[in-house]
Length: 92
View 1 (cartoon, helix red, strand yellow):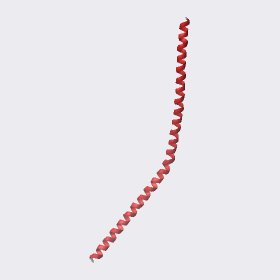
View 2: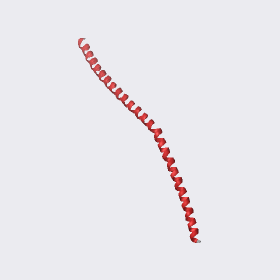
View 3: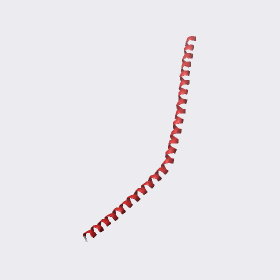
View 4: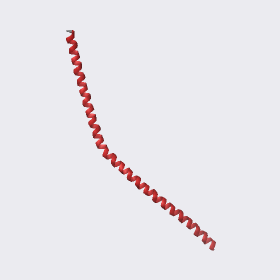
């Protein structure tokens, strides 16, 4: 009778353990599905954001080059103005 009781308790324990493992397995499958869904939702958004970042970087580089060119022209014109003003003073 003791053996029968122990066997019954062990069988019940095993049944409960299997149920818990099944629940854990189900939870893991749900989480895996959610991870895949998040990856599928986020991947296009990340790619779009990266493309936008690259576009902004390219435009910023273009603007920096234009500013550098304008700065060079202004400096050149400042030198020319200084020379012209010096010539005017020398003529007077």
